[in-house]
Image 1 (cartoon, rainbow, N blue to C red):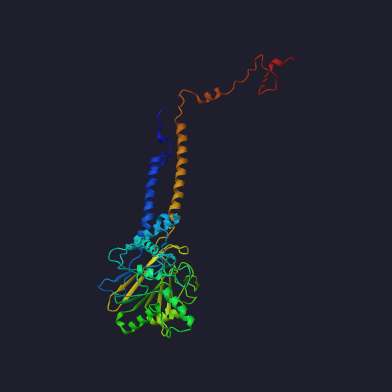
Image 2: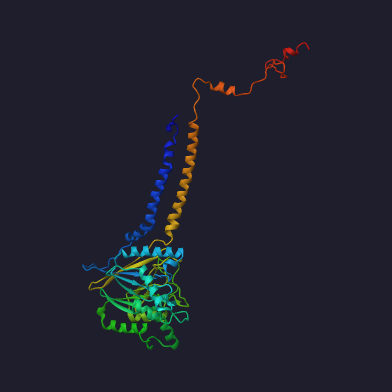
Length: 443
């Protein structure tokens, strides 16, 4: 006998939970989810962030400079990395692919390109290490790149664990540690901040001020003093933009602005690192270069503070660029966009950009979606089980129409013993009289 679906109001719901329909729907949903989690969240950065427009509009196209801080590429090659390391590399490759989509004219890496470059002993190992970095951060044709050294690249201070030839190797692969670049009527100063910290310790040890100090040959102080003399002699070089891996000195009470995730940048020093430049060094840089804006790195988190130019009330913004590499104390990595207008009156504009959360795809997307999928499958299984039970009951053969249901029920009751049976000891009392049975009368 065929079963009529319409006997049950849940037949439509049951059809939805049939295995083929449900699994196809879930598979399609997971494909959309993975595409969004692996590609869409990164592409969203292109729509949220834009190159800033300079204050003075011009028919000439502004020069676009992409600022990347603290790439922190580990030394281990991909085949020897842990699972977490491979996830880190995957995130960095996708993030960089999207960042290249901004099509900059220049890319400035603000130090700490290599996580452990200062410890590499041989030339071949250092060359292989640099190649790992460049494979992870390929550049489009026509894009120029500049690098400034970080303490993880060349070291800071004196340590037996640092390579003695790390600076020579660095300059052989990344270029000079101190650079001056004229770009769109602006003077861009790329400073060797670990080098100026080392020289500052030597100067302080001699008890000499920066004015009386004889700079080390080819050192950072010599570079700054020579550049300052040239800038004062040629004012047509345009306003100065200073790039330093290590942030400048600031008061402990200064806050980093609303885009900071936690706390502020406090002074501190340790083996191979220093959180800020010294107070006298910072004053020396501000007085010598008189920058209109400063970009720094090293802290991994965003920070926006103002410095007062000595001898004036001029305020100078310093932007500490967010780390491009994921870090434990920040939830979202990032980078910075700088536009330079080539007007006769030079102008600039800059804006920070945030990348997706490093673990956000797994913690905020995949894990909840997996839980929801398991829940749907569980309820689908329960619904199918209930539907199957109803189906089994409904397919039992019905009774013929001439059968009396009440009679059928009585026929299944056990027979009552007869009161007139000779073998029966059953005594029967009439319910509506107190008279004894006839068999007992006259006794």
